Length: 440
Image: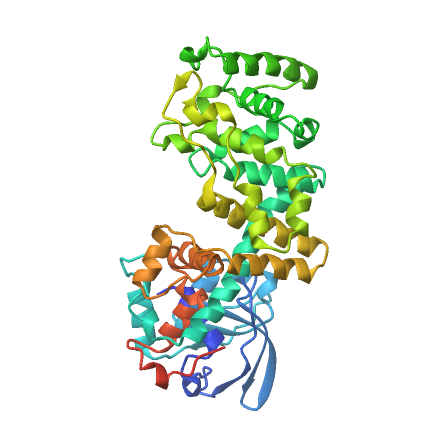
């Protein structure tokens, strides 16, 4: 048994209240279970209990065995001097606080079917442990939890955005540039794209926003993709040589240091996703006058923003995927799916963070509204949920389901999940939907 299960029982009152006694068989009446504490110190703060007519106010500590109080060194910690009740599954030892006072300890009794259901969930071989039970829950509970998870996911993304914002000297344009460039890597080349954005500041690119060729030279050169010998077939290619010449001038002007060209991955990628093609598309996007960030923040229509990201690589790449080697002619657009990836992972999060920084609920609500108007992602996680009977109608819900799967299901945090919480509270078998009274 784990302490987290006992925490769950205590927090939600899922134990036999009438079987909670002190050493003299006086019933302990719980007036207030206290506030759950996830940090150091007692497990529940500011609780109130009544024993033999006397009301006690203080903290609650919970262990599987009472002897664990000493095993954890609490008997020497003054932070535990205000513990008024030690709740345990097994009372195997009398324990004392740092003042030498005996701590009231009581064994907790509960329906074993709760523990059996909890065990079945955490030991389930499927990542979505509740996939057979979730279908029996009221859809209102599931949707309410997913709404909370979207905000939780955006808050998690906000942390990295704020870190970038601080690193860039509180520059929103630079922050958005780094964020959007990162996601141009589309997983495989995420790291080199991040390194590129750090090595080539947006302030430099902005000075050349009226010249796509110069932006390409800056990107390809700083990326290390103009490195001698990397594309041997390109040595006689006029476009390639022109880029090298232009970058030589620009790198000297701005004291730029290129990355190593070998950092970029080409293998096991579709040619249309080669970093060469993606960098040309990025150059096209960064050439937009007025700046991307301001257009994103001011936009009130999803389609207008999407068009900013549905860009086309320059003419050279219509019949090339790498330097110096011709291919079948294909116009290389980012496409709506790639645009949505940038929208979901860069645009929405930075709008959310910017709205919070400006205390603008209007911007935050607009970001969430955009998310509701974008098609859901299509990946293995969303397919798993579909098999479990949960369908994502929009990116709003697909993002929530990704958060639920990665942060709760995968880590078996069923007790911290409202869905898992409700399933466990029903015991081994869930009743029909009509019989359930669900927590809002």
